[in-house]
Image (cartoon, rainbow, N blue to C red):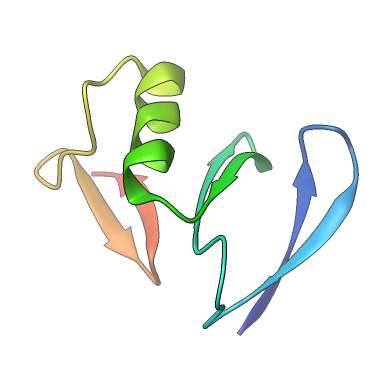
Length: 70
């Protein structure tokens, strides 16, 4: 699977899955704001953006490996 995204710098990038690196990324308003090979780092950025302490699967749901609000 390959998806096209715009980085916060305005540059366009393509993400392919599965990948051997930078498997976690945080998207805000359709723009990738953080890419990491660490789930903890991605979760920290998610918390900064949303004001949530961490991803909560009771408040959020995963659809095709993308986190959405319920």
